[in-house]
Amino acid sequence: MMLNLAILVYIILLAYWLGLEGLFSSMMHLGVVIVAGALAFAFWEPISIGMLSGMMPRFASAVGLVMPFVLFLFLFRLAADKFVRSNLEFGNMTNLIGGGALGIFSALLSAGIFMIAISRLPASEEIMGIKPYKITEAGEPILDPEGGKLWIGVDSMAAGFFSSLSGGSFYPANDMPMSKVRPNLVLAGHYNRLRRDPNSSTVASPEAVKISAYHVHNTPVEGLPQVFVDNLPKYGKPSISDQIADDQHKLVVIDTEWNNAADSMVYDGGVALRVYPTQMLLIAYDGSGRPTIHTPIAFSRIGNHTTKEREFTPVSDFKVVAKELGSANYWFAWMYLLPKDKTERYLYIRDRRFELENVEAKNKPEQQKAELVTALIGPRIFTPKTAVATGDPDNPGNGTGTPTVSTKQGGRSNVKAEDIQLTAALPKNMSKNNAPSLSFTDKNEVRSGEADVTPSGPISRALLVTSIETPAGNGVVRVKLQTDLAQSLLGQSVAAAGALNMLFLRDNIGSEIPPIAYVWAQASGPMHIYVEPSRPINAVTLLPYRKMGAGDELYVYFYVKKGARVLSINVGSLHKQDVDNLEVPKD
Image (tube, rainbow, N blue to C red; front, top):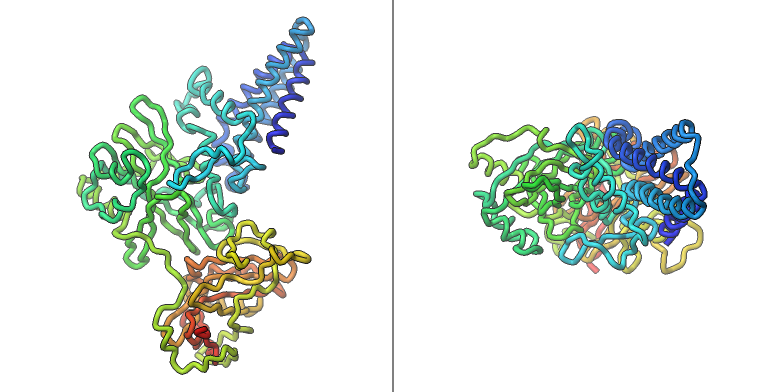
């Protein structure tokens, strides 16, 4: 509502002001808006990618469009007022009506440019009550009639107008008009925002992501796993699984490398990389040169880091996410299915354009190309790993059944964890309203997500959150580390054994249980909560011990099967602390 009202008030005020200025002045202002807008779109990528993405990656795309538009508008209007000192004489009614009409057109274009920029800000998929698209049950992004929409589609008007200009009288000298390079500009912007986690990034900064491989093979592809074909999306007529088996399409596989470099924002300032299929848009041209946008039908990741064998995830639902915990580089291969008469040209990764013709061509025989394609897909479906211990919980050994906790020093180098308890409690209570990006159970337990939460005053019972989720058949063990202990212990571990050294619990069944969550409780600041049961924390470098200040505490949480007894807490093979009488009760 507020956004619609702001746009409406802006249009009325600008139309009224330019109506008072007169028809000629209004015509001159419209010309200035058109030229400033065309130049802003022309300089959009050089400024946002070449200049701003290294300085402000989260805002580069939005600022890179608005900043040159405002600058050019100011300079050209200043020059017009300076060099065109006289006005043409028209009647009062002509000035008021004609000037107001042209003022409305100027307002529509300028407001549209601002809306296109706003749609690329790093926020949730809803923009001040406006949520034009939704994901259907079939997994397709479509217009949402109930999600709120602009009363006046200024973004679509501006995008259509400047796209038409780029293919006509304002056709660029580099033969790359916006109408072909950035087709359906409004849809692409909202696609990038269709993600469940508002903390996940909408940008890709320099050197943060690159294309490492690119292969194309006509369908059908020899050796394609049948389990891959059977699990492809069923929407469409014919369905994707039917299309990939005919001889009228081609399979495009693009492998991307993601780098968790400092300030890259790829891992969203945390430990998780989260990429949504709607953030990976392939632009292809048909025989007449008309561009179309294509979303992936599947993606794969490295399932076995020793053999580098891939595992795939079908995009049968655009709510799926390519998610990984990683301290360095990671690879996701994206698969697209195109008609044979279409030529793939660009890949937009989080609104950053990559030219596929710049990727090294793979001139291989058909058999070798098929092997390359199937290798990037992988032989099996990806199954999220869980942190729940494996083994026989009904044979817990010599446990006493009493969940009391005591610790003793043992092993060749002691962990000396300050506090080990059988509890899922958070160090401080919180309100659900303070962490909209977290997912909660019906009992107000934290299920998953990542957020900075500032403890508030009195909290109503309906909003009170005191613990993380305890799944059926498991208990939660919490380990507390003070600042000096966390930094010395975990830092020494990394220095001695590298980034993949793990913090884990060992139980009497022989399982090594990695943590599924942590809470960084700052002495003077918010709690940083990270809970991800489906992807356990498999490296100590994923814990924020380097950022901890004096008085901070780090709480790490583990899922342990009921009936199992915890024997020790370990950091790789370098540090160990034995634990006595910590057994998860069966009941």
